[in-house]
Amino acid sequence: MFGRAGRIGAGEREGHAYLLAAPSERHHWQARLAAGYTVTSRIRDRLPDHLLAEAVQNRLATTTQAENWWKSTLAFHQGLHPLDPLHDATDFLTDTAYLTRTPDPDGGDDRIQATELGRLTSRFMVDADLASTLADATAHLPVPDNPDTAEDALITTLATRLPALEQAPFTDRAKAELYNVLRTLGQPDQATTDADQDEEEDWQPVAGDLARAVLLLVARAPRAFRGRPAYIRGIPADSMAPVLDDAQRYLAWLGAQGPLATVHPWIAITAADLAQRIRWRTLGPSRGAGRLLWMCEQMATPAHTHALVPTMWQAARARGIDSPDWPGTTAPSTCRLTPADYRTLLASRTTGTEITLHADRAHIRAPRGATVITWNGTLTSWHTSTSTVLEIPHPAPQHDDPSAGKIGAAVFTRGDRTTAGWPSTYNRTSV
Image (cartoon, rainbow, N blue to C red; front, side, top):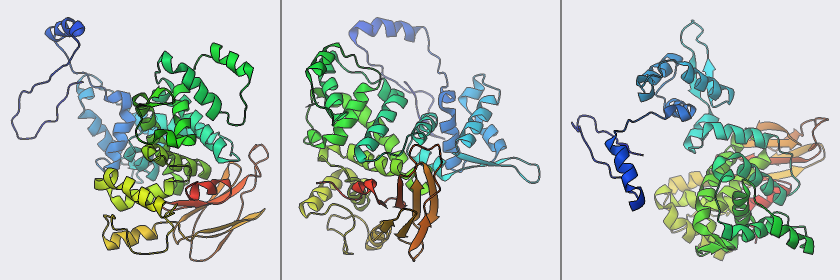
């Protein structure tokens, strides 16, 4: 792909591009270049993402402004004159709650504005269409009973819903190891039998198997990634990177929706923790490490994240610290935040949260302004915490909900979370 970012007023009228090709393909590309090349706009392929980005950056706020923006694109000038693609994109973003559309009471332009979910989607640079597909798929997942089931459900959903994961290639050489990973880590309660050995010889992988195996390795065998090995269980580490990077972004997107209450709390909690463990996999973090890793990232600041987070993590674990819930107010020596910003970070934790679950209600003490969510099966109830203990009845169960009776509660701030029940596994690092 060739392209350029022009500098306004610089007077540049020409530039150079270099195409690198194997010797066997040289004549093919020379012929194509000699025949001429036309740049064709591809904006329509991901028009909702571009439109959402414009709305998030406050570059347009009405339907007329959106139409004028569309008319300024290369696609419009190349013949896509109808406004139908733009209107379709606007309708999609509205239906998926990424945008709100408000009619003008005076009969003028409809006003459009990015929602908090829309801003989150744009910030994480996830494909709006794929994100919507993923959200729909996770919304139909039953509430699990334990973290193993929860992680396996999310991993399988990602591996079968995201094309980059579903179609991830693998070599024949890795086939046997891939089977072993799925058999041992995907079904931890089943013992190996002679029949399994026979099945291995006839087994053929299906779409998404490599991605699922890779994600299961991070989730259940994190020590295998320490020290940046070239091969992990016989699978090249380099071939895992694209799968892990894509999965991490979508999991982080799901996890960040906790305070928005746009996904079930168990999904947000599990996804947030798994996303952090994938991102910092070379540290070999175990289940529940997400909160401490988040705190390290905040203290390091974006400019020093990759250099300082490993140091902070190792120092914390050496001192037996497994969560960001320490009582002191003095920042670590490696912290790059100002004293005022560090105090603000301490206040943004869910430290001090107390959750007591009863059969019909939950008693919850949480930081003021935090999002409190209780659930009964797939039904949830959203509240904002105050300075007092909240007594919140569990939602009434639906008769056709297979998860009815599985109750819980969680507290979210902008970056932190604490929960009760089996998800409390994610409150602190498992040793």
